[in-house]
Amino acid sequence: MTALSKAATRPFCWLATSGTRGFDVIDKIKSNVEQACKRTVSCADILAVAARDSVVAVGGPSWTVSLGRRDSDTASETLANRDLPAPSLSVTDLITRFAAKGLNHTDMVALSGAHTIGQAQCKNFRTRLYSEENIDPALATSRKATCPQLTGSGDSNLAPLDDTTPDMFDNAYFVNLKLNKGLLHSDQVLYTLAGGATEDIIDGFASNQDAFNNAFAAAMVKMGNISPLIFPQGQVRRICSRAN
Image (tube, rainbow, N blue to C red):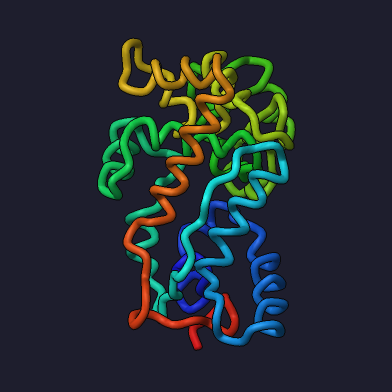
């Protein structure tokens, strides 16, 4: 559970600098679970179940979460930075990163659709606002109001990843990509190249909510089963933010 560990050189590794929030919620859940059943349910399982339930709570699909994961007893900034796709990556690099984990093009596009909810920090989309031409002018103008061009100014200011229905799990994210309304560079590049490897998938999801929901649920199951730690490896952490 590198993503949950504060033991790395920089807390939460690259995730911290990209604005990931909500770990306090996981800590609260863990505290309640520990009171009921000590050292039994891992933080990894809690995170997996919380991800599923959060999607369902905002109108998204459900899926079966396999349980029995263990937590890591170490944290690696190097591995986190290597494995987590940055918002500046090209579509080729994104495909390579996902393929390395056994995830295909459809999985990648479906999982990117998680950006139908959530927010991003200014520092992660500033370059797109001020340096890229394939962005909807109205969106760029709106976002520039809270994301100044000067590096270091307003870096942590937040904006919704889906400008249309930011609090609903739907297929508006894909509709937005077709209109050049992707907030992150790594979002919009999925629908930039004519005849590209991901355009047809996006067209399908943009026109069919059920197709997106089904693909997303399937991809979440696949991602949740990528090299899980199981007994006797790892540990069940008492506190998610640090190893026992």
